[in-house]
Image (cartoon, rainbow, N blue to C red; front, side, top):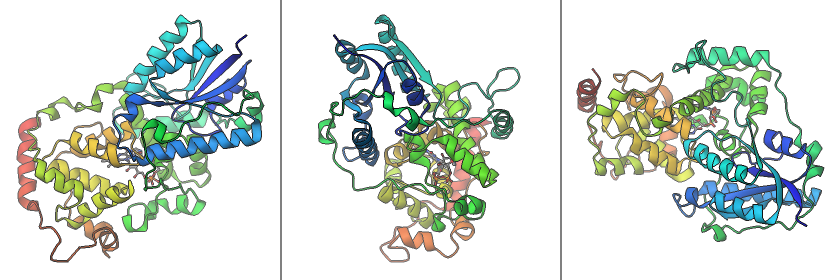
Length: 434
Ligand code: FAD
């Protein structure tokens, strides 16, 4: 006789506490079998020592240990294609339902449709929950149901709607006794999935009252390193967005709160317009004649453009998997505008390197810097990589930290002249979009 279970499928929600789908699974009738699938399709595109894979792996091991030590349970780990994993599970258990939290990226949406199909063919319910955002899909839209393409009115309505609802925290720990009692569920090692331990670490997040209170004053200065580092934690769900919004409100910091709303703004854009992951939101921007010079792209990637603030940012990214937001805007603008290299090249490089890489935010922000996106800066706004130093790194602290050969004879010469690159950009963009 096979056990009847409810499966809970962890994905971008790697935490036991305040996890809505997990909570609901645990409150359901049958014992819960928690699972995680290392999807071969996703892994095949990543470097073998990817820091994010190490982070996911280590987080799952910690969660497994906690469930084993305190609750006599665990998380079953699989490596493969999700459909094949579910086919196997269906053979081994009588599954009443599969619960999971929704993921809105185009690949995930398709994957979930095929899993739903497979489950329904086997009379198994597939129940999905909103967990990684406060508002999803078309919950914050204009009166006529059309999505917002401009941030400010979206943000205002988001806040208005938020104030009307009670923000509930789901105390998953209260219901963990409904897990299946088997602490020897299948495990994997990093090498089983074809990976090695990364020597880069995902930085823990900081949301102290002081950081949140001083956020506006410090967030623009990369040398101060005074932002929350929440990115990867929101991406992989090691923190609950509801708790973070609560903190922002408790410290009455609208600016910090609004950053969290930017995240949801871009998520709803990608959900409404999934083609914008590789096409310009404003289609005439796809007429731009990019130069796409590979040698210059390599110099940009390595942080050898001869523009120290750009180079500091790229070196910080290469060494640590993080780059300060101010500098992301500068290096992005420099790539698209000074070098006339397609924003998609930069987006792909960031996707490989950023620990906080998240498709909606990365695409949304890259299209913003390129001028092709929603609510984007006008194309003729071109950051001056030298005057930006005076504004944001006047003591050269950030530059000196990351560009060790700054002011040495070995340091690269400027790969383009600012003034002529600016003029060239204006000519090329104007030809495409006007
Ligand atoms: P904080 O300043 O402490 O902000 C808190 C949280 O608010 C962030 O973790 C993030 O979830 C959200 N947030 C802040 N700014 C933005 C923004 N502009 N857009 C969307 N969400 C925001 N952010 C990502 O999470 N993933 C990406 O792949 C990504 N790619 C980017 C690419 C470019 C070219 C640019 C200009 C920005 C990108 N950002 C991305 C946005 C922003 O730079 C990062 O969210 C931020 O620097 C992460 O550091 P933090 O967690 O310390 O942020």
